[in-house]
Length: 116
View (cartoon, rainbow, N blue to C red):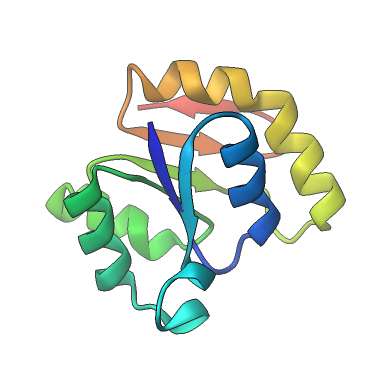
């Protein structure tokens, strides 16, 4: 699995994914950094077969209307501190990976994780 991490998520998420053995890039690695457009992120995800990880619900709209991106991990935990975010993500990471192998849309929040 390969991932692209959107700008509103910490760069450390990319590092965690890479340390876990996955190919991951962050928008800060791209030429336009945090100003990389959603369409550019979708194009990269399509060209490189990457799963988008984001908090941006605009990606959900694109997924539902146009089936783009092909795979999406939507974080709906609201505004939480990075320490709390990493605790949430790391504690659910194994389940996230399992669900991504079966589903194209995963939602992770502070209370549950669902695959659709």
